[in-house]
Image 1: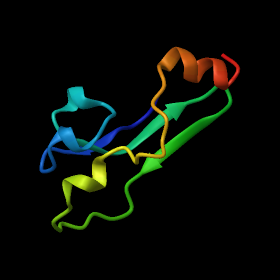
Image 2: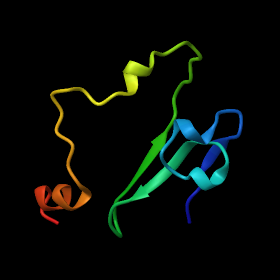
Image 3: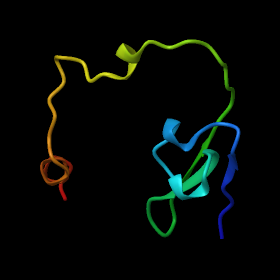
Length: 75
């Protein structure tokens, strides 16, 4: 049993987890194994203008498929 804390005051488009909530998840678990769980928790939020360039993939990064990524991590 896990708890997810979210706010509808921040649009879900700013997060990539639990988009079905209709808002931004501020605290949520990621279950790794039966004995390991990571809890992601928002510690602060600041409203300020951010350039769209901040969200672009840097030119020195390589874009790969999920299948390729799985092979890289032993999947």
